[in-house]
Length: 275
Ligand SMILES: C[S@@+](CC[C@H](N)C(=O)[O-])C[C@H]1O[C@@H](n2cnc3c(N)ncnc32)[C@H](O)[C@@H]1O
Image (cartoon, rainbow, N blue to C red; front, side):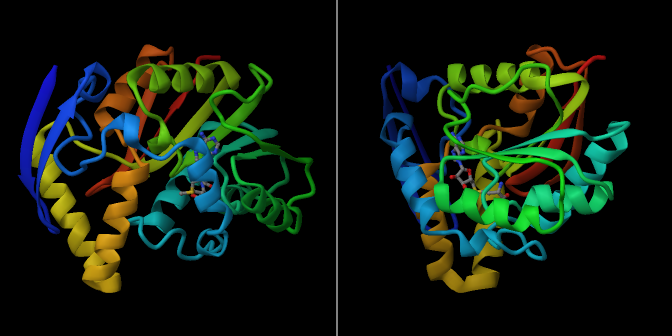
């Protein structure tokens, strides 16, 4: 099967030719990216890129600069987690990076909790544990593994946060497996909160939002910065629409699902597991 499409973005006009069932399985990430799923960065390549990028993820004030509304999204998921949970005792931070989201959750909760920090990158985990230890006297456990294969306790966590990480999931079965796992790992009444880069169902809307994101990147770092960010997204990321992810949350068993925020290609949302 072959799918083709062409689109103008803030950077250039691309013609996309996609071959094979895997590439065409979902049209969601099309039209602004040229690299087919099978050609995206491997897990080892992702780990090695983040190993050398710790500093960029270590500011609680700004979050990640390339993310629109990063501080707001972080605040919203923390407040949502606290609002939906009687007492947060155990937390899992998936793709924790340098620990920003756990730190913000600790600030918002106003009390200590036990936390499992999970990431592919050893240097990220070391930085995260170091920062979290300074403000939280609950137990801190680091897990250097791929979330998809990590052996984690089921029905255990009151809160799971997954910030800027799920866009590394690839085909439909990868997404479904990961969302089922999020549901299984939560304790009854627990909740998962996600912030991420998202794509759009309508190619025209995807193109429109990509242009807006390009304008944002240009405004903070110029056209070269925009092109650099777009190039690594193309190589490394395979985001899905927030609508797809909200539906998937429901389909794996979450009864209540909420969208907290969406601006251009970024969204914050989450779901609560039945008691
Ligand atoms: C963009 S950073 C975000 C870090 C942090 N959550 C934040 O918001 O500041 C993504 C992180 O996810 C990690 N990561 C990517 N894919 C992963 C996977 N499959 N399992 C675990 N961690 C992963 C990377 O190593 C990286 O540290």
